[in-house]
Every structure is written in C-alpha cells, then in structure tokens.
Image 1 (cartoon, rainbow, N blue to C red):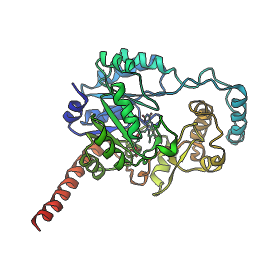
Image 2: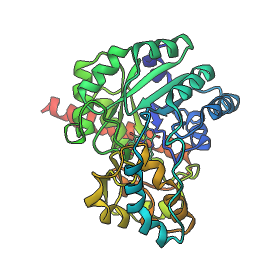
Image 3: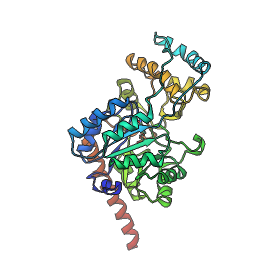
Image 4: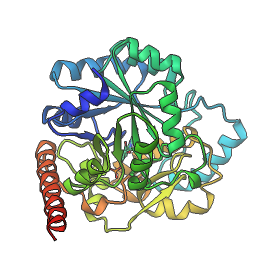
Length: 361
Ligand SMILES: Cc1cc2nc3c(=O)[nH]c(=O)nc-3n(C[C@H](O)[C@H](O)[C@H](O)COP(=O)(O)O)c2cc1C
C-alpha cells in the first residue's frame, strides 16, 4: 500500500506526533484504535528495545501505526568541551542538591543499530527527523515493507527526502513544539511557518504532505487539508491527553501557559527546540550558542531535568510545547480525536457556506 492510500484510508486523517518524554505506547494505541495514526517515539530507545515495543503495538491493534527515530549524529566531543559544559551546569545541579553526571560513554543510542532494529521489527510506517536517510537506507526500509516519512522544514529538505526515495514528507512549521528538524541550513534559514511550508512543498514535491506545527483543533486540521495536506500531525494538542506521559510539573505548566509563552532555545540539548520559557531558558540564553551540539548537551542535562521533575520544579525542565500551547485541553485521546474531526467538518462546512454565498452574489 502506498502512503497516500494508507492516509486516505484512515477514518480520521490525524497523526499523533511522536514526542520523546511525552508520548508512549498508551497514547499511540489510543490514537490508532480511534482511527488516527499513533506514533511510537523511539528516538531514545536502545536498539534492543525497539523490536519488543513494535511487537507490543502490533499485538495490541490491527490498526496502522508509525515509529519515529531521531537521526542523532555520532558525537565525539573533546574533553575540554565537556568540562566547560559541565562547569556551566554545576550551579544548576547544585541547586537541586546533586552533582553533574560522570562523562558518559555514549551520548545517544547508535542510529545505525536503531535503524537495523527498526527494519527487523517492520512497523507499517517509520518517520525520521534531524537529517535525511541515504537511498540505500530507504530501499532497505522498503524491502521490509515499511513506508518512509521524512521531516522537512524547508522545500530544499523536502526535495532531499524525495530524492532519497521517501514516501511522504512531514512538513514541520516554525510553530511546532519540541526540536526543530532542520538539517540543510542553520536555524535562521529554516523558520518557515506551517501555512507557507505546506503550500510550497505541495507545489514542488510530488509526495503526500503531513502538516505539523500549530494545529490545535479541528479548525487547524481543516485548514491544512484545504491547503492540500494529506493529514495533520498534532503534538502539543496531545500534551494534556489522559494517555500522555507528560510529567506533573510539565502538565501544570501547559495547563497554565498563556499565549505567546514559548521560545526557541538551544540551551537544554544543543539543538534548537521550542518550549514554554522558564528560568533555565532565560538565564542560559546568553550561553546557548556555546553549549556542545546535540546530542552531547542533551545527555549532559538529562539528569538535571530528571532531578527537577522529581523535585516538581518546572524551572529546570525542558517544557517542550508549540506556539498553540494555550489551546491545549485535557481529555481522553480518542474523544479529542473525534471532537477535532467533527470540528474539521463544521469548519469546512462553514467555509463552503461562505464561498457559496459569494457565488450567489
Ligand atoms: C514534547 C514534544 C516532543 C517531541 N518529540 C519529537 C520526537 O521525538 N520526534 C520527532 O520527530 N518530533 C518530535 N516532536 C515534534 C513533533 O513531531 C511535531 O513536529 C510537533 O509536535 C508539531 O507541532 P505542534 O506541537 O504545534 O503540534 C516533539 C514535539 C513535542 C511538543
């Protein structure tokens, strides 16, 4: 089956965004069972955890689902860079009554081994962010019957994925919560909003487009479908879902977040990501360009964020969320999904009514 056919056959063309730290198998299952496409966020999983996670999803539902990997580069930072980074983090760790971690052997799971495990596990769909696969890697996924979705933040990145043989593009607009997926150019040249990105990729690349970034309800879903997207991908809108594993202080922050409360920061992970601004982001703002690149800084701040979560302190946690965060609402994921799809129908009917009145005039 082609990706276009799979998306067209979904009872509800809404994809749950993979969200390391906020989505686990419970949310993915609830979304797939309700007629959307759930996603396992496997970016942080060790290679040998991927097979069992995919097998558990397959055992729990006949509905399609996807698995997401983050293409972290192999990191080989020098000792002096690590020392400087740990020194900078020391006061933050001290505030929580702990010391910075010992220098780890690895900074992220090995991508090649994760990919091999994913191919062996053969989920229906796999999505990737932070880089582009080689043609050979895409062919290997296809041989295993896996449909491939590449994340793009610009038309050039969408073209790169098309050239590698991907089946579809996840167009990630500037509004999106979490890490930016840019990989060809720096941040400042990769900040296209969802509306322009979906329209321009649709105009230039002959692949199904999944729109992501700032879609918070059925009106947003209708808007991106009207633009020509085959489906909408929603992340922030699921952060308060009953099945999300969003931590208590993070959930509280999302519930209380006003509009205009998110910022991009490189300080937590060494890669730009969008979240609700807190004290760590504010005070580290000036140093954010000096921290080691992802995944090194990500690994060095992980114990800090875990300790802050344990201490119920949102000021030192990466509170990833998109620009629409003020519209996130709690509830069961299946009910949210059905409500958004009904809203999308109402929004489309409203627009059709208006355009019809225009014809009559
Ligand atoms: C908490 C959080 C974690 C995320 N983790 C991932 C991830 O593991 N892999 C990925 O490809 N995208 C990740 N994203 C980005 C989403 O896939 C998607 O692009 C984004 O949520 C869409 O924008 P929205 O948050 O405005 O809905 C994450 C987003 C959030 C909010």
